[in-house]
Length: 575
Image (cartoon, rainbow, N blue to C red; front, top):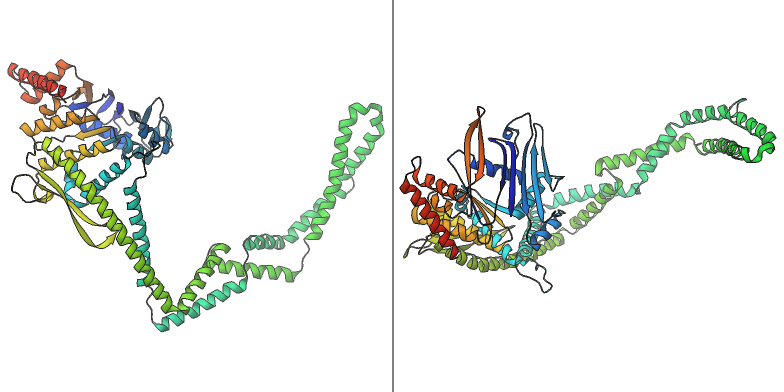
């Protein structure tokens, strides 16, 4: 549930803190007052697109913070699966905008904006004022059906109380995987056809490449060893000269080794006079003398070990050139070259028995096609079962929304080709009056009817999943009178089980509010600002009167508003 929304320095909003409640939360106000800005601010907190143009005062950052309560074990598990630990059963999503960047946070920790979107998808569902237009696209119909089928599968509980495996989702994934394999096999077969001369030519070239790589007898890590050896050989004269100078400095008269030796002899002669006090100094000086002696031997051993002749240098150089040439042509590493060798050997084997290779491809493709066909049939069967349940529930919801004699079904057709989503071509069909044939939505429903149909679908889906908060942005487009009353009743009924936040211009819908908020635009210090406040019961009646009567609110209009509010309260008692 959305507990509160804080907005600072965003568009027309200077600073607002809004606390929401359970049930039906209504936002109303004059056109252009800034209601959509509040939804935009919430969308920003949920990872929506950020723009520096949204910042009201460019000298200060803009901030949006949304606080949600996490109420069910399912929600808790979902957030923990995203490595988000609710704090005091709350999740806080925030977004801060400056002139150069946007910072997203969850519970105070910085996260990518995409993670805000993922978290927001678990918490609320926003139904925009033009979303009903998506029902004109058949692709949206199957998306809604699959959403319902997945939510239904996820509701089953296992014996241990854990959520059962979502078989529908697994089936969709199996279809997608099988289709990917099928497409690759089909593409390979389509590109496999070649005439005999092409086969001979490619086989000959492959034999040359394979022999070239095999004869090199490459070993993993060999290139690094060669490069180190070559670098040593190429710079050996510089290294030897430096070592000789060091050895000379250590062995010359009055050099380090000589001076340390003389110091040790001097100290040894007097050490017996204060054995305890000079013990550590004598030990350190002895160690230094030993280290210098070891160093002199190590220098000599290293110089002797690095001796090599010109022939060895040339062999190393040639071998390194060969390895690098193969890497340049077949891969960036020796392992990549060896992988190429394996692929070329496999390809040559196919070409040497090309007819058998084609037969294997055809057989494998036929088996994969049969597997994909069966998976698609299973997916269609699952969809049809879910579609029957979905359309029955939507039909009931439509009747609640003043579609009195409506029939709502889903028609299934079969595509003539496979897709990653199966072979179904399905769409919603509706008949809104007795005797009318079932017809596609785009051929029948008006804008206002589409809005109510989407509302019905959304409310049905809301009952099947764990999303607690539903937001409806001006769903009253194109409706009035009795229909508006029915819509208001449906929203209030949904508000019994979910938190509903609704922006509306219709008094019938506003009268059902459990919490009513007024969005106003005013001028302060020669600047236009939008503000929002929660209305008392008396103020809510005044706002209803404004929505009923416009600029002139008479006693009659106010009495109508009071009556409308009273009737709404009475109706909600009976649900």
